[in-house]
Length: 172
Image 1: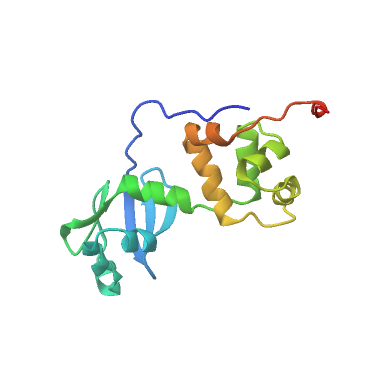
Image 2: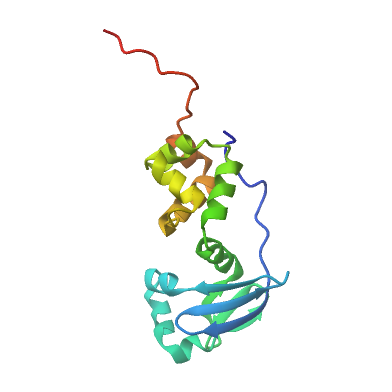
């Protein structure tokens, strides 16, 4: 098992090249390195300060503008804004987590199928079905795996390595 690694030093502030409002509470983002993301801000709007509820109005949401490479602002109101770091974190969590990502995650942590199944609290057959693609990987599993990768303490609290060989016989 390879334990998760804490990031060294401050995280680089991501920079945006363009932003465009889309249907719903979605922003289409283009980063300065050419990558593109679509970020659904529904959860952010609903769980944040009531001041942001005005963004429920499609006309207000459509006023999104890139102020500098690190801030998206609505209606020219500097208080009605979100920074690129939060957008990058939301985009990261909203990216698909399917079979290829599951395999890469398991390989990165050097986990057996049994260890991975135990870690997330499912039967090894369920894990194997996700890994082989026989069953779709549930969205919640992506959230859990990303959390384990991001937080070494959370990983350490739940990880139980498997030992090779037969378990010891029960005392009679």
